[in-house]
Each structure stands twice: as structure tokens, then as C-alpha cells.
Amino acid sequence: MTMSGSKQIRRKPILLALLVGLCGNATLATLSVSQLAFSVFPIIALALAAYMLYQEYLSVPMEGDTPLCTLLAFLIGVFGYSAFLRTQFPEMGTNYLSVMISLVLVIWLALKMGVAARPAAE
Image (cartoon, rainbow, N blue to C red):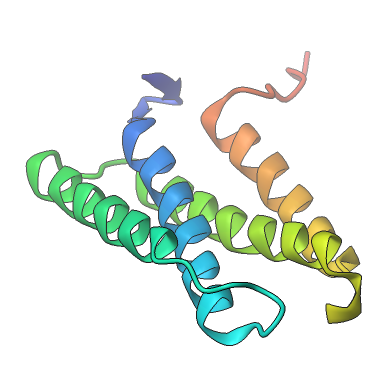
């Protein structure tokens, strides 16, 4: 657990939200993108990750910056998979916007979690 001010940010819901974002976008892509072959595995992974995130939400209250960090991780998963998919299939369009949004969200999440500490003012 990392301390951000006086609030604790748990990492398990953040990782599960990242998985839900990745698997949710992969499920939508599997069902809607014609270049991708259908696979049942993103659907199974989405169901399991969402169930685990829901169980984590029921068992331990989300306090402090954990809900915001969870949302950031979810969006990183969504935009990250979108950027990966557009890199794999360039005919779908450019991945510049997805990469830039993912980068900004990763930096914001790192600052919130204290991984990338801001320089202290003297």
C-alpha cells in the first residue's frame, strides 16, 4: 500500500480495473472489428476481472484516492488496448491520440500513487 498524503491507495482494485478496461475494449473489438478473429477469451477475462473487482469493492471500502486511481487505470486499459490494436492494424487509423491520452493518464496515475514524486518546494 502506498501513502498519498494520509490516505492509503490499494493496488489490487487498480490492477483489476486495468484488466477490466483492457478486456472490455478487447471484447468490443472482437465483436465489432472485422480484421480480428472471434475469440471467447476476452469475454471470459472481462467477466472474471469485473467479478473480482466487484468482490474487492464489496469486501474493502474504497477510501481516499483509490476510486480516482481505479478510474484512471480503467481508462489506461481502454486507451492502451485501442493504441495497441491500431498499431497492429494501421488501416484502422492512427493511434497517436490513444497513445497521448494513455501517456497523460499513466503520468497522472503515477503522481497520484506517489510512484513519481513531485519535487518538494523549499
